[in-house]
Image 1 (cartoon, rainbow, N blue to C red):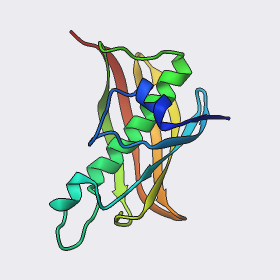
Image 2 (image 1 turned 120 degrees about the vertical axis):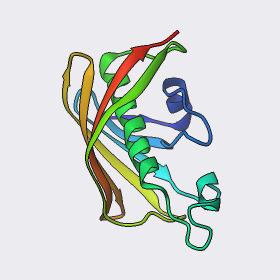
Image 3 (image 1 turned 180 degrees about the horizontal axis):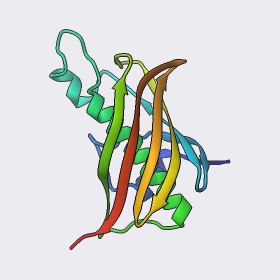
Image 4 (image 1 turned 90 degrees about the vertical axis):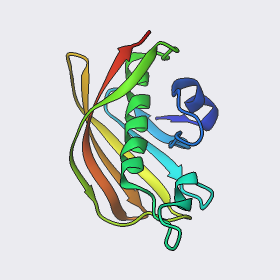
Amino acid sequence: MTTLDIHQILKQLPHRYPILLVDRVLDLELGKSIRAIKNVTINEPFFTGHFPHRPVMPGVLMLEAMAQAAALLSFATQGVTPDDKTVYYFAGIDAARFKRPVEPGDQLVMDVTLERAKAGIYKFKGITRVGEEIACEAELMCTMRKVG
């Protein structure tokens, strides 16, 4: 069982505030799965406009959080630390479903499983829960590319 704290996550992911959406990795099994958390607070910048009268985390950001967890799994599995010339991109999102709103004070628990890796494209199954309730689930496809 491998865990990562925020300092280790910052060394792996290029994302920073306000788009870094993984606070801790609770479990990581190389080549198989990752369980990570995102603590949702009222201080998130998107809540000022989504929605002022009833703050709800945008679904697209839940997908992004799962993709960031998937990137951490991929990097650990490959034994690489990405550099400034490495970017991990979405290649596709399928079967995305949103089952419950996520509000300030919730803790997202993201379970992401590597389904397959072929020709540099990684396919994952992600399920995000708040407590026992599913908030979001999707199939994610990602790829790593060298840039500039």
